[in-house]
Image (cartoon, rainbow, N blue to C red; front, top):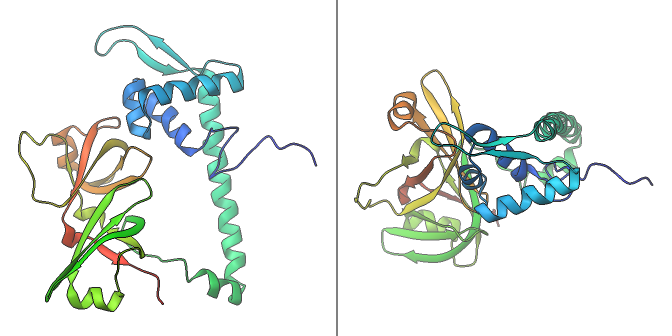
Length: 264
């Protein structure tokens, strides 16, 4: 069997050149700042630079150029080779989506397989579906509170009625998914010395901004790569001057978090 040029990992091109790496290239293209791009893609500055050097060695061409200068002048830019790689990745993503759509159509024609897979598949309108393990759980006469810890170490707290917690049979150590609607997430760019009462506050860097007719979907990448999405009015986007590469904090109350656990 011949060696494959492509090593797909959702997808990836070559060693370590995965979706997160291409998010770094895209952020560099958008911000012209390696430091901002590293935050956007969830890397440290040193880690991003090291990865770019490794990738440049693999393709035997530099992927970025740096030009000194003050504000609005100079910065870090992608080389033509990097743009070629980025375009190839986008094309592969589109082709992979098309392939997966074809396979899903095939699976839907296999009733027994579909029945098995649906045990692990859940479709919901909640944009944010963050999986983890219940690390803390308290239940009282009326309400209950559970904290999910994600694999990256982030804690998300949910508040619910005691009856709901009993129905879900919640306990410490149970795998669960935190569901948060994008409309329930508030983005804060400057706390101005104030402290908020909301239990859940996750800081990261804006990595995506999709503007619609009335509102925008804003993706916030946390260190480690986890993404939280917020639905923000266009007026708010303009008022706060939101842009890719900008640091922000996703804030949402514990009662805005719904928990999902596997049916026993």
